[in-house]
Length: 113
Image (cartoon, rainbow, N blue to C red):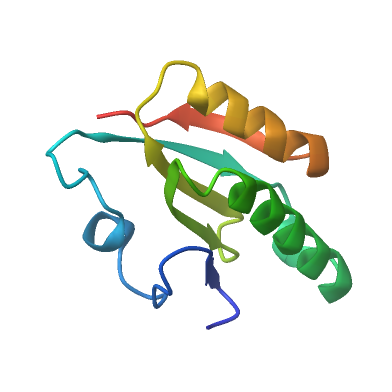
């Protein structure tokens, strides 16, 4: 893994554009939903703070491993991208759960297709 990106699921290798690596549909052709969160100035924080933040995000997302299909943290732009099964209210639930552990995280938008 590089300093710039951390992928949390599926052992994905960083570096490729998200549109190439983020899954868009399940095995039955149903679209996934996506959202993006910005964590302001994360890359400028001390390494122990970055590590704790990433660990907290991974812990939250692992609790939702039955619905989260992809997650990527791009430290270069302080951006977390999460793709999940499309279920009503799930974007809000997931982003709220992340904010409980990373209060500075801001939901940029629900990128549902």
